[in-house]
Image (tube, rainbow, N blue to C red; front, side, top):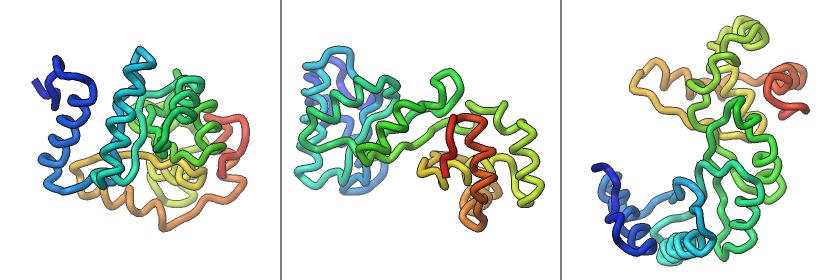
Length: 198
């Protein structure tokens, strides 16, 4: 019931309907970013949808476009190479079952795509409970969530987060009030990467 388009409509019309619903819901005349929820199964469908998104950019309706739930590097590479308006954002779940998206993150760094992590806290309770994170939290007098978010931002990853708690909002914004050292970044990176991310 919450799908913002007619599922029986042509794919390009679905994109237009979804975009219009976003403008209404956000009460704005444009979007900073328009994100495709996930890659489509068939290449021709992917092209049709991406071209519809490109037209929205051409008309000034969105400033940038990207894709979410894209966990296969060849899929992202094919999209990037075929797109007239390149994806500049990848939003993926950052967690152990995907190997923390090492290959996708490397590809994003290589071509200048911003990697955004979602469900960063809920998908990683083992990271938040790890002794390294707890020690750094105590050293910096911060929460484990702040330590993880700060390590990721220093590595060029944008952690997406949402909360209704004013306290958590303030804590999320406060991650820019401190910085992890190179050694601390390396210790964090060892939890989810093979090399330092800072």
